[in-house]
Image (cartoon, rainbow, N blue to C red):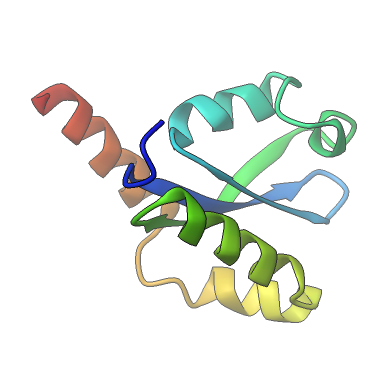
Length: 103
């Protein structure tokens, strides 16, 4: 994977009311992995999960830094981040799908 590949930092809402934060190069694939119980140990025991926030970042390093930053946030701050996001996760996924079709 090239360092300049577009990456995503995302937040999942888990069934028990907690949040899970991660990063990936393929948001659609990663979401399917989480929902299928193959994403992470944390989410595996907290299904179902829902994608509630995602942001596109220019590269792996930036995505990893953003993930670490969000993980330090208190739950209220994460909730505010989700509520105040400018683009909905559904719009982001729709845009990603459109880009895949155009390629």
